Length: 115
Image (cartoon, rainbow, N blue to C red; front, side):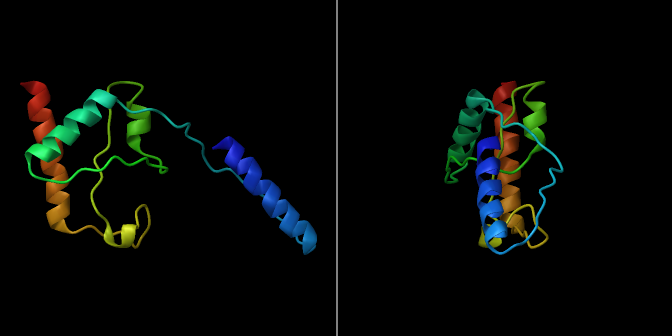
């Protein structure tokens, strides 16, 4: 991520110089990427499949509480569909039916872990 930022800044700098423009980059926050718990992810996949839902492994580039929680305990993410694939924005919208499915996956995963 840091390398990508430097490469992007170099491209912006070249464009700005070409057009005699100024720019500045201000970092507002930084969370290092983390590897979430693989066993917990597999359990959530199994729960989704047991409920008859389709599953897909997806990386996430957004910041999540799970990044911080992973330092304390095993953590994973359960994604649900959002209209037009938009998330972390005012335009984000998920249907209640999909929200319920995501909650059921989490519930089934917790029940499985407690058994």
